[in-house]
Image (tube, rainbow, N blue to C red; front, side, top):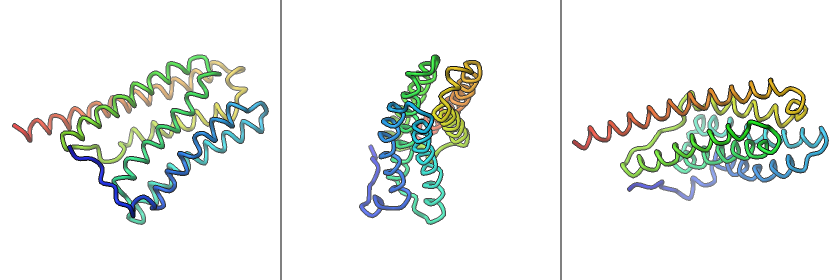
Amino acid sequence: MKFIEIKKKDLLTIPNILCYFRLILIPVFVVLYLRADSPADYYLAAAAALIASLTDLFDGKIARKYNQITEFGKFIDPLADKLMQGAMLLVLLIRVKWMWLLVTFFVVKEGFMGIAGFLMLQKGKKLDGAKYIGKVCTTVLYSVMFILICFPSLITNYTAVVNGMLLLCAIFMMLSFVSYVMTYIHMYKEFKEEHK
């Protein structure tokens, strides 16, 4: 089985440092949101989430532009991304009625991705970067979560709007999930063909 080869020089590239910063922002965001009791507090929590999402946007761009794509970066970037998304979903779970359905779907989707990725890695195959639909799903999820975090009055006063936003997230998660399932099935078939 081939594991990720981590080179010391790769640990301190700018994209990977941005990932570390995103990881640090996760507990900062959680504490800010859970302690929020005024509009300014919610804006501060939203600002932490926004900064985290911007690091996700820029680390990939910097890595591609300055040829700083590393195997470690391919591992830590999606990990930091999913942990931040999970934190946003979990803190909203205490305030949004149907959020538990979205959290469940997120756990199933990411659980499948983790298990399928690990199994394919054991066979010497790996997914090379995020798919387009995965990036769109991430953008939609970040946007909806940011709005709900920044404007908590939506949750209590506009239930239908909130449910519509959750449904939108669920649709994109489903499309992303199906796309990745098909990709992993294709990868597995390729592996079987190669080892006939």
